[in-house]
Image (spheres, rainbow, N blue to C red):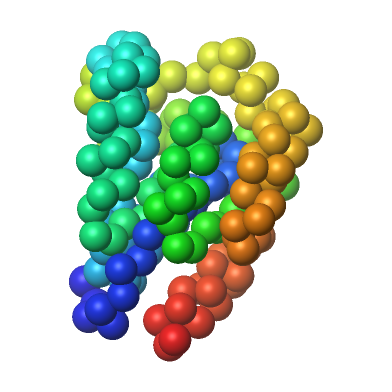
Amino acid sequence: MKESKKINYKILVLGPPGSGKSTLAVKLSQELNIEAIHLDKYYWRPNWVETDKTEWKNILEQLLSKKSWAMDGNYIFCIEERLKHANKIIYLDIPLWKSLYRIIHRWIKYRKQTRPDMGEGCIEKLDLEFIWWAIKFPFIYKRKLMNMISNSGYVTLKSNKDINNWISIIQNN
């Protein structure tokens, strides 16, 4: 990892499924020498069982109390708490076709395996419910998410060039 300034980055990475949230969290982790926190890894129990809400609250408090992080995952039901702790918010805004392509590519790559950014025992799957959610995201969930983060000073990144430029800017500040 590169040596970075002693800044306590707490970066939320949001966006549609397949937008590259986890990939960006890992990249930020490497570039800024901070921990990548994939919320999916903590939320999902084996066989895609959701964590109990009380237990989730405790887990989230522990994660948010860490000194620095790049945290990916939308989880709208707990975004208010994460916004209180974050000092940078990124929204990845990519076209729906690209999101769907990446979802299918990810399914092929990790088929019959658990992705590194996913909870243990959650074998990669691709079902109609998830595809439908991904299709609805830009039309329904994006609007909800944007309303929730509208006063946070978030930045929208639409390409790898945008991402690299943003990382360069914060590294040089």
